[in-house]
Image 1 (tube, rainbow, N blue to C red):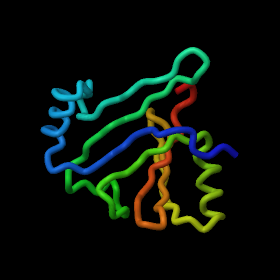
Image 2 (cartoon, rainbow, N blue to C red):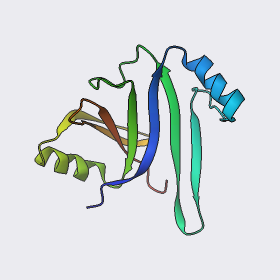
Image 3 (cartoon, rainbow, N blue to C red):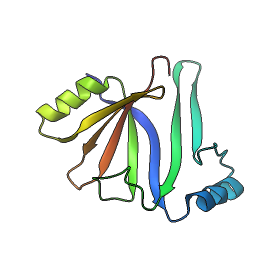
Length: 126
C-alpha cells in the first residue's frame, strides 16, 4: 500500500494570522485567499496535478490539539482508510475521528513526540 504521496499543507500558529499573512503577501508575493492562506498549485506534463496549502492559524486554535507543537504538517495520502487501519495495527496513536468534505477525506495521527499529523486524501482527480 502506498502511504504518503506528498505534502498537502503546512499549518502553524500565529499571534496575528492576518498581519502575518499580509507580510508574506507583501514581501514574498504569496497570493492569499479569502481565508488567509495560500495555495501553491503544481503538476504538469507527466505528473498529476495537486496543491500545497500554507496557512497561519490563530494562536489559540485547537485545530492542532491534542498535538503540543505550534505547527501541523498535512500529508497527501492515496488511501486514507487503509492507511489509518495500518497505523492502528502498528500501534500508532490514531485519533478516532475522520472528516469528509468537498476538499477530500481527513484523518489524524499523533507522532511519538506529541505532534499531530494530518492525513489528507484529496478528492478523485486532484
